[in-house]
Image (cartoon, rainbow, N blue to C red; front, side, top):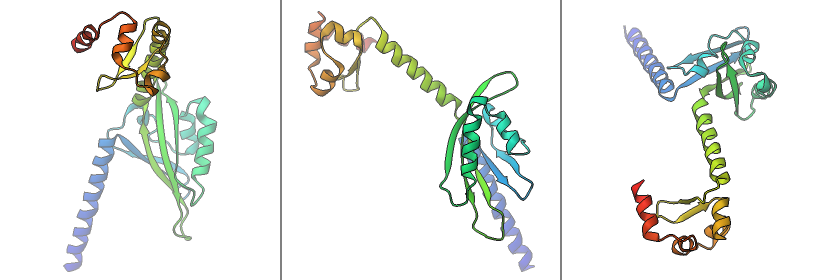
Length: 212
C-alpha cells in the first residue's frame, strides 16, 4: 500500500509539473521542439495557444519537412544553424527566419536549441523552444518607417524627452536653425535659444505640446 501511495504522489507531482509547463508555454506563446535519432528523426512540438507562425510548424515528421516550411531565402542559413546546433556540448544557438503558409502569408519565427549528450549509452537529443516574433518585426518596421519620415521631412522636427529637453532633431531643423543634432545633444543648448532662432516663443511651443 505504501508503494502505491508513493507512486500516486509521484504521478500527481509529475502531472502538476506538466500542467505548469503547459500554462507557462501558453502564457509566453512558446512551443517546444525536439530532434532525436531514436525515433527515426522527428521534429515534434508541444504548444500552448500557438500563434499562426508556430502553428505552421506543427506535426512535422522530420527535419526536412521542417526546412521545407522555411522561406527559400532563409533555408540554407537555417539548415546550417540546425547542423551546428546538433553538435554535442556546443553552446545554445538561436536563429530567426521566415515561414509562409499556403496562401503566402508570411510570419517570423525565432528558434532556440541545444544538444544534450550526458549519457554515453543514449543518443544525443536536440531540444529547444520556438516563438512567433512576427509582431516584433512589424513594430520594428514601423519604427524604421517613422525614423525615415522623421529624417526626410521638409518640416523642422525636434523630439523632447520626459523632462522637456531636446533629445534629437531632424535634418530640416538643422538647416533652418543652424544647430546640428550633435550640437543639440553634446552642448545641451538651451531650448529658448533654439526656439528664438525660428521666431517662436517658448510659451507658445509649450501650449502646443501640452495640448497634444
